[in-house]
Image (cartoon, rainbow, N blue to C red; front, top):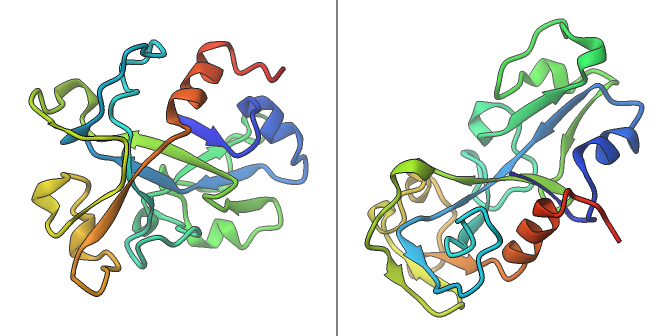
Length: 179
């Protein structure tokens, strides 16, 4: 799912940036090994998987600028310029040097990712809607990010409860129409 800081559709986001044809989005990965109880799901069946380590980048955990496969980003190219000279799913650094390309800061827009959604953990740890920390990738199962993550002094990484996730899903389910 593509998230925007301001409630808008993908079309609106792209139209507000007419100078760009190539967009590179970083991502937030969510764990499916920890969940919260949700009484009223938005319809995507993902509301209870609301714990994330935030922005993920192989070079620096928490970085908001994560280009190419090393940052696990994905790209969007305007259909009107396809085929773009060259691109890959995770993007190419040389493309980001072009005047019509942008690496979107993850605080402005990012992809929300749930690894292996169709085969999630059937027995997650049920938690309160508060942050928690882990010390090994086996505890969260997200792209082995704890092996490269910036860790706290105690050697752990904090996973945050995304308080805005359900509201975002409801917005998307409504057709992404801002009121």
